[in-house]
Length: 148
Image (cartoon, rainbow, N blue to C red; front, side, top):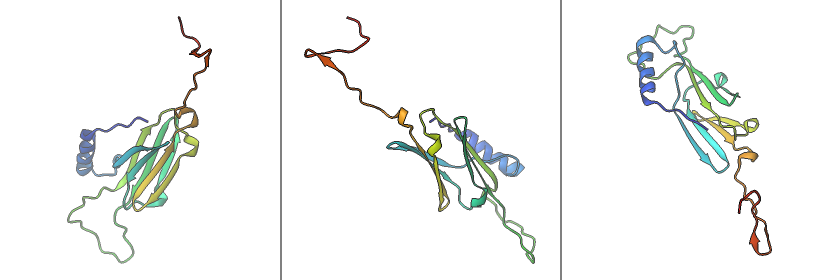
C-alpha cells in the first residue's frame, strides 16, 4: 500500500479554503494507516459528517473515501446566522489511496463509529509469506536450478 503525505499541500488547501470558501474543492481528511497481522487498517477522522453521505469504493487499485459535512441546518423560524468564528471545515471531503496488488479487495470492510471511519484491507492469500521446504537427498541439500 502506498500512502502520500504532504504537509505543505494540507496547509495550502486549508488556506485556500479559508480564502475562497470550502465548497470549491474537496478537502482531505486526517488519517492513520498501519498493518496489524494479515490486515492493513486505515482510520479516517470524520466527526460530524452525515453517515448517509459516506462513500467507500475500491476500483483499479485505488481506495476512494468521500463524505460531506453540511453547515448549520436552518429550519423554519430560525433567524439568519452570523458566525463569530467558523473553523470547522464544511463541504465535501475526499481521499484516495493507491492499493498494492497483494490485497484482497473483495473482502474490504468499513465501519463508521464515533466519528472515525475504519477501513480494513486484508492481505490476499497469495501475498502472504510462505515457508518453503528444502528437499535433500543422501544427507545433502538439493536446491533445483542451482549451479555447481
